[in-house]
Image 1 (tube, helix red, strand yellow):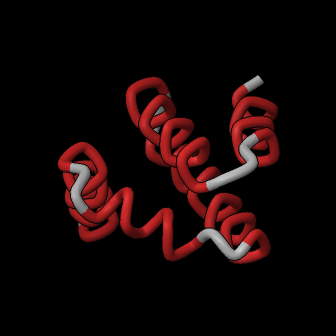
Image 2: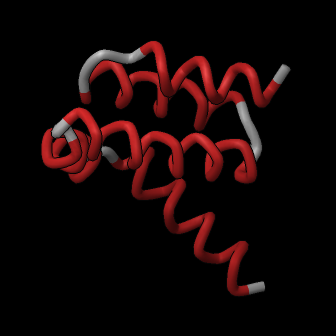
Length: 78
């Protein structure tokens, strides 16, 4: 079910705003491994759609995203 959710969130979105909202929702619901899977698919999808720059702008000022990245980096360094 988790895999299906992450894939569906990625392929359903039609623009950076929708992917951004999906990411925000997933950060509050899933563990780091599922968020990593989503982020990998998300980046590929956004590049294909030419929306990567727009997504980066949305996430650049998002403290929740920054907190997630900090936590994720700490986890990788353990």
